[in-house]
Image 1: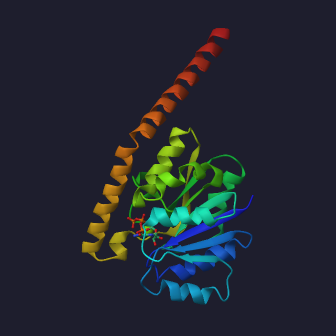
Image 2: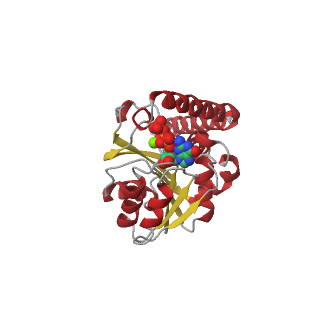
Image 3: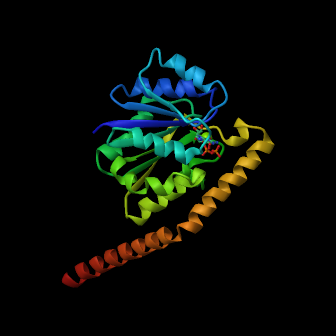
Length: 241
Ligand SMILES: Nc1nc2c(ncn2[C@@H]2O[C@H](COP(=O)(O)OP(=O)(O)OP(=O)(O)O)[C@@H](O)[C@H]2O)c(=O)[nH]1
Ligand SMILES: [Mg+2]
């Protein structure tokens, strides 16, 4: 199965080169797609220089459209069967991280794999935001039906994808990426900007949850049904003994 790695970037001049190089170097067989979400820093210049030595697809959106728009655009132009979304602000990327993210999909032991940086300010075990990670692998065919629903929901996209997969009863696997570093926005920007971004992202996520309560209900129904089935199987087995 062919893999398309989609890197969405918005003003990540400090980290973009290393992310693109790592993706290319560790995945020579994969298609690498960089969607530049209208960056106004040195991102474009850096990427154009990289294109002389590395092979990847680069598309720049004329204006900033938000993370979800960029991710959907990446999927639309991808040709792989497996999609691996990869944030552009991360570092300490190792070959093993790609294997860990992709193997469960190859082996059909999960329909979506969510990678979590070990190097963040919140401990992996208790991080309430770990399901909103930017490193996620899934089958393209599973995300195609919701492309139009997620295009404009900006930072609500991860919440929507998670809810959709849960409501469809798909298996989600969490993995810890050892050594992988993801800077929080409190480190990336000034405190005022970080607070502003935190509030607007929170609103986008909350709005996604409220608007898609049907998916939440569907997931709850699915979980109840699964539990009931498990119990009935257990009792039937006991009865037959
Ligand atoms: N902030 C932001 N990031 C974007 C946008 N479009 C694409 N991105 C990329 O999406 C990825 C995640 O963005 P971040 O701002 O780091 O958000 P996050 O990692 O989900 O959130 P924090 O951990 O709270 O910082 C990065 O690779 C960005 O460059 C956009 O419109 N705004
Ligand atoms: Mg980030």
